[in-house]
Length: 223
Image (cartoon, rainbow, N blue to C red; front, side, top):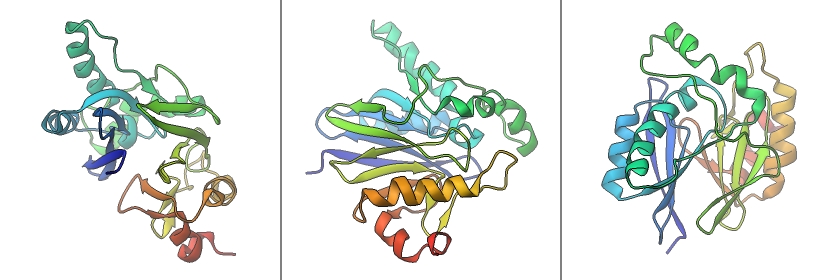
């Protein structure tokens, strides 16, 4: 049996992949990129009997972080009643602070409601390690889509959560004023692909893939 399990909950009109990942034995869970619809996320957590230990953010875009504060509020209320510590929000890199602080403003442009500005309990940096039970997710700073985008890699399990850095057959958008296509490609080619072709990943939108499949066929990564 695998040491961990995953459920993906597409949220918001952007169908962003909010990911629940948990240790099989302990049911200790991390919620990755809760961009919205916290009620649906909470229902899934309850139905699976999971214990949320952490909320992880890969970057500051509203569809990845806009539901984090509401989700934390409900989780913390239950934990406070039980005399337990609150659930921390971890990540992204602090270079995405400006995005997290304008989520509500950006949401108005898309007609989204209920999304809230949020700042993490802890910024994450290259080389940090986030533990979830026996799982160890190493943090890589992979800018380009946003300046503070990070990726979580569990090397022993050959698995990564890459947010909007890399997709099946594509890469993250860089046409924002703060985007940097050169930095994005450098991060993918220099940090992700060298980890091994066998590493499977979940991305921020759509189906996942492996680093090897993208190295071989992703048109954005070819010379």
